[in-house]
Every structure is written in C-alpha cells, then in structure tokens.
Amino acid sequence: RLLALLIVLRLVTVTQPGAVSSARGASVSISCRTSQDIFVGNEDWNRGKKYLHWYQQRDGEAPKLLIYLVNGRASGISHRFSGSGSNSDFTLTISGVEAGDGAVYYCQSYHWIDNQNVITQ
Image 1 (cartoon, helix red, strand yellow):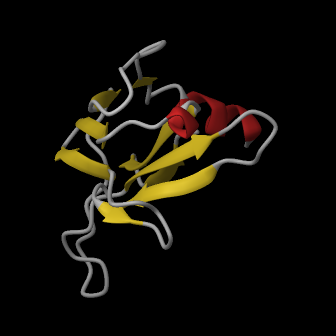
Image 2 (image 1 turned 180 degrees about the vertical axis):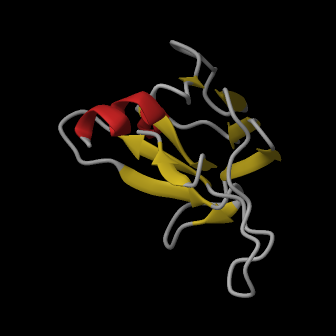
C-alpha cells in the first residue's frame, strides 16, 4: 500500500523558482507550475473551486496560509498578496514589497489521478 502511494505521488511534480528578488516598494511575482492540472471541484458544494494554495514560511516559524483556492486571501493577510492562474500555471504576486516579506513561499496543489487524491507538499 505504501509503495502504491509513492508511485502515485511521483506522477505530480511542482516547479517553483529557486529565488526571486525585488526592491522595496516594487512588485514581485512567484510562479508555480504543476506537471498535471489541479483538481477543480465538480460537486454542488465545491463546483468550480480550484485547489491550489500558497503558504509563507519565515525562518524558525511554521508555514502560514496566505492564499487559498488560487485567489482567496486568508484571514488577516494583507491585500498586497494576491494569487492568480489556472490549470497548471499559477502566480503569487506581492505588491509594495516590504522587508518583512523575506521568506520561503510554497504552493500546494491537489489532484485527482487514477481515482486517488494526490496532494503535493
């Protein structure tokens, strides 16, 4: 069973830039590309929802949810952070970059492959 899970997980890869830089006050975009299209809800309760999320992790801290379902801003997150994209190509944009924005940014995607859930991390 574990072997089967590992095989499925290898079907999806996520590509993000190694590093990006920006001057303070400028805007910066961080890309996220998945090797398979993300899952889009098709039930009454989740129809059209696109399952791609963004997290910020500062040194020594746990990851913090920034953006959910491609472009939903998590509670308490500045409007300077925004998300966009579809299918397998997504972008996190930070406007008016501040010194405190220095961190690692992760995208997390959800896929439905061969009747199995696959969540990248």
